[in-house]
Length: 178
Image (cartoon, rainbow, N blue to C red):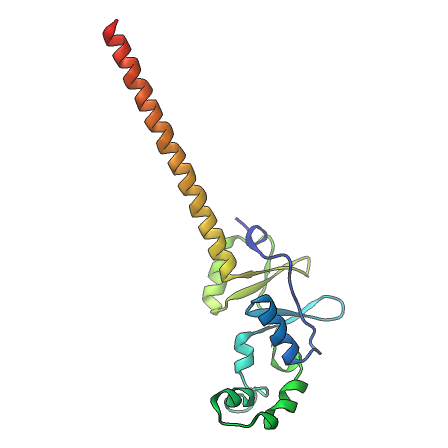
């Protein structure tokens, strides 16, 4: 199987100049953990994931809990953070130059890449254009379908073997009576 066989092709994306709030709303609305970031010509320029929301906005400083997260923990007041988060652009938090795969990439390579880089989703490209996304849930779906198909074939084989055995038994009995 190849990436194209399991990828989600109806990809929801976001632009680098969109705000973080918009990305969060899109991710929640579509129940997805990451969004490809595309420029005006549809070229993939990054990816924003749940993990990116947990990193500090300015990555060149020593790690400090994001201010918006301090709201959830009660360490900050909403009005201190609201304006800053609302104005924050995706370009400031996204992962640039994400790891990608081709739609022709074998699934074993997709799994190896996800494992090696400890990532949950990969943009899928064809001739440099975004054509899909593969998330771990897509791989699980493919695995379950494969197991279901294998089980169905195995069950059919067992039924066929049982029928053949019964026919052979009946044929043997018929020959014995003759």
